[in-house]
Length: 117
Length: 194
Picture 1 (cartoon, rainbow over the protein chains, first blue to last red):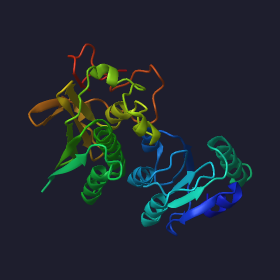
Picture 2: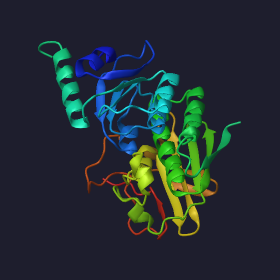
Picture 3: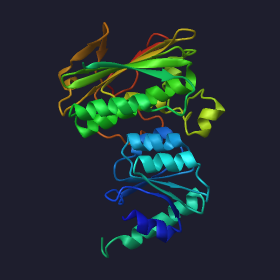
Picture 4: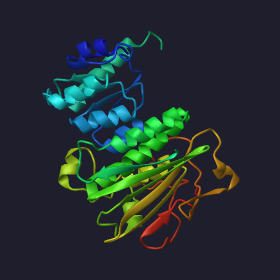
């Protein structure tokens, strides 16, 4: 799924646009534990999380994660945005909490699937 | 040079992950299979974060040998009083500031054991913690042949690595289960289970 389209559909603010060739994902993982994010992240995963730190971006980079969605309408610290930009990572901020964000993403995901898939 | 050492600063959440990133770069440069790189990075990152969270400092030493990487992470932390307990998923003594960053879920050591092909830990109160793990870099895993590896004079028996990285259900056994009745303060993944 195209990340720019997804951000628009769930009402998220795009804080860092990522690399042009890394603007699509094919799976989503939501969680707040670094160990879980490490285990489940991949180069095609969108991470949705309450966490918000430059360390999160660092861990995501380790696993080649192309995109992170922060939640709760928070204003990410400048160092987080800078870390995402320097790594070519797509960073967006959803205006709603983790549960509602996952619901919106899930709806978009289903809507984007080809009919009959 | 296929041996390298990284210094890990305890409590430094800004530079945390730097050692694992360099390890990853080495493995990718060596042409390791992506799944092997992934598993090695997961294990290295968990081990590195343990040092950052719990210790004043430590080091990561890695040796790249044909077909595998051996990693040792040693710290000058408080040590672990009950290693088998610390190996249980969900057990953690991480401070609140670490939990706020997403650590302290009690998954670090179990994740290392799960990601690596071989794993051993030695720790005691006041003596710090030293853990070692091995990840095979290609498709062939000598565990099937019953081989062991020798790293810094210590023989590490190989566990049968799980095919999937999916999390285990609580209470579910696995091929990396601790041997029954290990000496207090040490553990190795030398007991393939079912």
